[in-house]
Image (cartoon, rainbow, N blue to C red; front, side, top):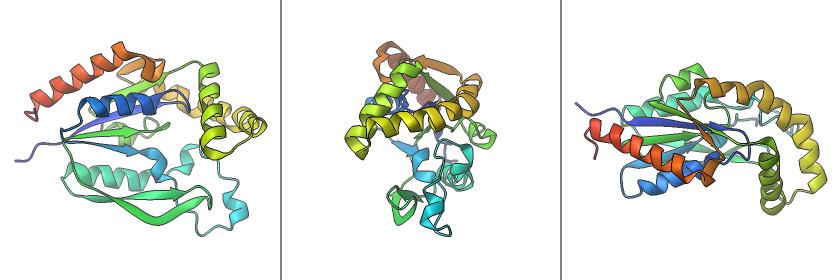
Length: 211
């Protein structure tokens, strides 16, 4: 009988450092059977909407995500079945026609701002992490990223943060912290917490005889 893969959820607000935590854990197990699934890849397909409507998309709201497809893919991977992970075109604000083949692995790290918001996803997780970082650090990190990687202006980043990101964080993301098994302050800079997580994951894998 094949062993069920281990699913680890890593949540937290935009700019919290959850991606850094995910990558740090992933690097520790590089060479083992591990994969990452990012919730950002699972924004809903909006090809049926005109571009003007797509431009209004609130990417920090739970309804922006196609959790049905994400759930379907995680369940397929748990059955040791490969999936085709979708990709998203941020210039057209809809799903791309390109997909990424993903083979099943022993460890699945599921990362995203709202992965703990959906009870169906939570129920698939063996461990739930929440990366908790002060708002001032999160906005600075987001500002640096959006200006450097997405060509945004300081004014547009601040306006979006105040009008959308901050209220969505307070309404939907922050409350999911209560579902976490472990809360990690300060994201990828918290090497002690990451080391503890790696040790815990190793224990789980050993119990399942993966290592």
